[in-house]
Amino acid sequence: MAFVQIIDCKTDRLDDLNRLMDSWAEQTRGRRTAGHAVVATDRSDTKHVVEIVEFASYEEAMKNSHLPETDRIFREMVALCEEPPTFTDLDVVRDTQFNKAAATRLLEEISRGNLGVIDELMTSDYCDRDYGSEGEAVGPAAFKERCGGYVGAFDFTFAIESQIAEGDEVATRWTWHATQKADFMGVPSTGKSVVGRGTTTFRFRDGMICEGWWQWDVMSLMRQLGVKPG
Image (cartoon, rainbow, N blue to C red; front, side, top):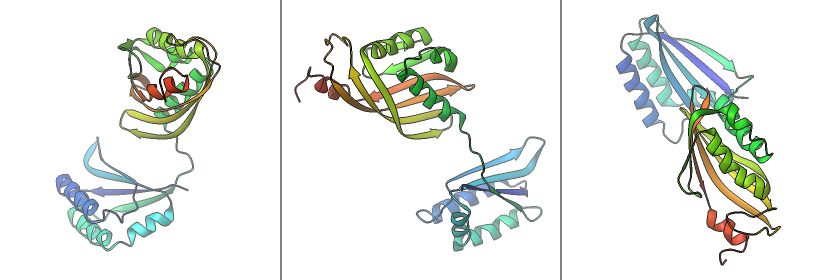
């Protein structure tokens, strides 16, 4: 079970605190078990600083606590604070990452032929950059037309292999399993089953997808369809 530790403190020396955190990160490289850390200040009280640290489990957090650098940095952190920091230990019972869920849903629904999901999840100025196609597709209607070419020519599914979310972007590594059922890019229907692999990165704005970048092996697809020599 994932584990989160929240550290509350009062200090007006935020720059010194950040330098301390940078020092700890450098000194524990390759050994620390913390996966993600956020430092934030309270809008109503800028001296109120909260650090949120994520771990894969409570046990991993304990390994982190036992590092000698952690103990030393903590003592230095106490010296920067007006009063001793407080700790809240939390077992994560739900972790919903909305942008990742939206990216997954879009790919899966398109593979089912449900292009209506594009209007639901994309901004009106969405810009699509598919490096297997010429030019950009701007707007949901243009992207829907681009997807329609694939949906009309193949029966296919997307298998999500992995996802990474950072800031307002989600990168999805996928495998595409398809069977050609109609003409595609001038290639007559072959009835062949093909496999494609690639990565799609979506950028979000206010919870909606506003940009997309597709990088995948187009030449491999053409070879499998018999268009390009193997």
